[in-house]
Length: 222
Image (cartoon, rainbow, N blue to C red; front, side, top):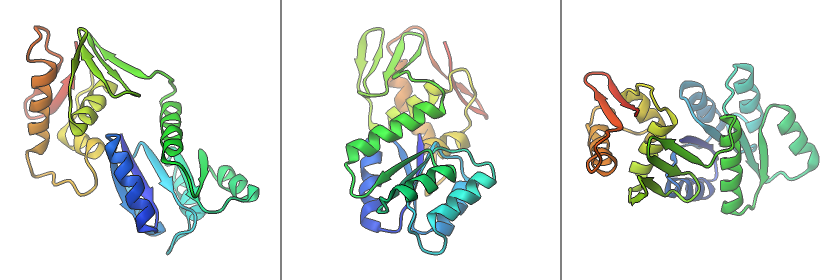
């Protein structure tokens, strides 16, 4: 899952980015409203965390423009403004949730998970493809009852494949959802990680789940 943070306080942005990356999310950061609007308009994100008090373009304007342009990505407003009217204004402009500073990271994470589930119109906490299962809360992965240890990036990659079971995913699509904005698309990093993942989830099992479509991409299916 890929998240955009639009926050001009570098310490706050860095704290959130580090915490989310530890939870296996791919994270981009914009330090002002204009950059945030451009990134949100040009890229496909699963969620946006948006501060209200931003240089160049304030958060409400960013929010309004995105909604006017039919960008329906879930948006969580994160700001020091805690007056009721500020919360009401943000929600009326199209925000999906509102969290005031200072905040507990655990609450931010819970709100992010809630919004992501809402955006997918489902409340399940486990993904399954054949005898392979992935717990979205504990991050545990099992196949045929055997636990499989994955790195953070392998977990993110597997989650993306499982959420798109049966769909052909190109390397560009994978880069956009699993890596951040600075990813070098001219490297073979994606192929390397896919091979590592395949060894862990397929090598010791007769039924293979992760398939390569040469020259196109990858697909996970039973």
